[in-house]
Image (cartoon, rainbow, N blue to C red; front, side, top):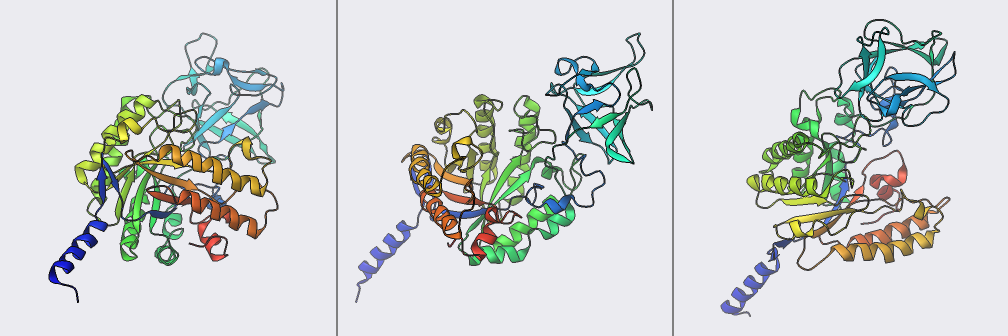
Length: 471
């Protein structure tokens, strides 16, 4: 029978074992995050669920579409001379960047055209040579209509804001050559149905203890965000917090799309402009303020990721550090316990470049993303070579950013997909297991991309249900 003093000692030991450890600003959590990204939900990505685009009029002219136009009569491409800043001509025999126009969609037939150097197309009435078509405006203003030929949808005419059609000598129509379908954000029905409470029940029953929820900057303006975004994502996020609380799941809010785009991917036209002005940095800080203030008292809030995948060198280290400092202070204004996640920059960047900042702050996490994709390195790798790469290279990468007195480490995105063709179910199981073992050493945890996807191996739900991954 234990004495009272023994029982007291055991109680103290038990308590100490479950206290977060603090060393040089580092707080180690009591458990590791085993999360799944709710990708394709509040930041809607068409490749995750292509049927979202069904029924949209002129759906091949979505926001962000890249177009090249070729004159039917003269056989030359429409071109923004010098890539922008001067006139639009129709005299190029081949097409590249200067000949590519990016759409800002106003409605199904009305658009603004943006050129390579980021100017917008418009009319110049002061040349003395009639009315010239130019690309000199730095802000969007004049709109154009694309009128399609009912007999051949690849043939279009472009109607200028003055009501006349663009023409050269002789008059022409344009042959629409190709389009690139980029992301568009916001379908209210999709937000109500793509992720539901039953999904959180599934998550809780299958060894997942957290969700990482990508959001866009426009959520702070809900229910009336600026064009072309659609209100409703904030209500869906509220539901996610409610369901997380019901099923004991933690939430990581991830600012996935920042104003001006931190990497060019989460943007209406592919340009990377985040951090180039004080305005969009401050606007991003305001978004973090809005989100943290809203959810700081919710017990499910576990971490706030200040920005996702800033791309070097466009998002400069100075701008990132300035923003991360301010973002950290904003989170701390509302919460002393929420972790603050700082995403490493993509591209040519030192993986430890954030350590001088993050190591001196409490409850900070460095997010790294590991994919055996998106690089020619993986093009011809066999099953075993991919697994060896995980065990050797990824272990080394993770070890480099995991230090005893630095920030915690988080593999915020990974997937059991690769470039191996005709891989078997057993091959995928081995590949997934290798990543689970390596990523499980991250001191904060990991998050699979994503819960649902029409591409089966990108869907953790499908992978679990079909025995490819066991947690």
